Every structure is written in C-alpha cells, then in structure tokens.
Image (cartoon, rainbow, N blue to C red; front, side, top):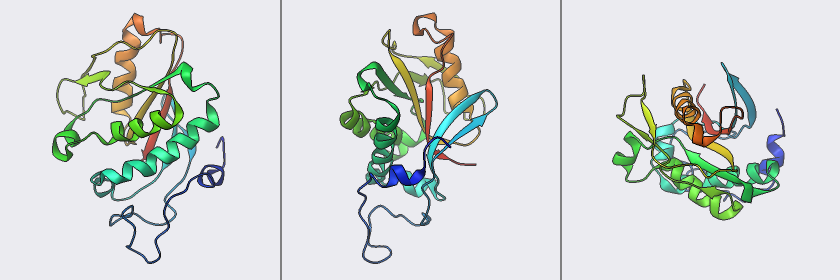
Length: 192
C-alpha cells in the first residue's frame, strides 16, 4: 500500500447521516467500512483501487454517488500528482449502463474530478464495437494530446478485460507514444 486510507478519508467531507438510511449516498447493499485503498497487480499491470462496494448496480444507478468517488479520486490525485496540467485522464468505453441509466457513471466521476484538480478529462477517447464484455473489441475515437501523462480510469475492475483491451488499443497507435511508458491506471471499485 502506498498511502494509508485514513490519509485520504481525513480530507473528505462526506455527509454523515444522523440515522441509518437517511443519507442519499447509501443505497441498499452498501456496507459501512467499504472504503479501502491499495496498489494491486493483475498479470502484467499494476492499478490503484480505492473503493469496495457490494451492490454495484444500485450504487451506480444513483448519479449522486459519482460525487463520492470523485471526492476520493480528487484527493488521491492531489496526493500523487504535483503538476496536474501535465496529465490527461480518460475512461474506458461507454457501453450498456449508459443507455440504461442515461449517463456514463465513470464520465460523471471524471467531470467532477477534472474541475477540482485541473487534470484534463477527455471524454469518448475509446469506443466499443459492441457490448461484448467477454471479448471486447475497442477502437480509438480521439487522439491523446502529445507530451501528456495519461491516466486511465474505470469505475470497476472484475476480470481486467476492459482495461487490457483499452491499453491494447492505445499502445497499438504509435501517435499515442505509449510503447515505452505505461499509463497510470486507477480503478474506483476492485470487484475481487
């Protein structure tokens, strides 16, 4: 672990309900003590994850919960990144949840985070040919600015296929200049 969870939590000002169930930020299935930060590895990548929840569908179905993750992500990035203007953050492709919910949860998190950190958020950099989660096929829609450090954000990590497919697409395009450097990978929910 690179930093202690308490160091991030201490900087957050999340509402504390007077009685259980009073908070709009606690949909059914979210348990107390769910915040945990760590540096993890899966096969060939390392990623930062900072949240653990149990009913993820209910959590993502309430757009107000994007503020919870954005606050944590903002403080995490401020902790690690001294020069935010030199960084760009993107998400993995928008897929099934966007149509059903009417918004892309990860993008909502990053809109808030970008405004509070000064890190550039590029929306819709990577697209998906279909909604296949087993064998995803992605493609690049927009260029990444040259001479920028890249952060890839995903709101959930289960098998890693989305992140790996995103990395493959980005590394195959020589204009991205990622053959020799690895982006910083940050996951909101490590679902393992």
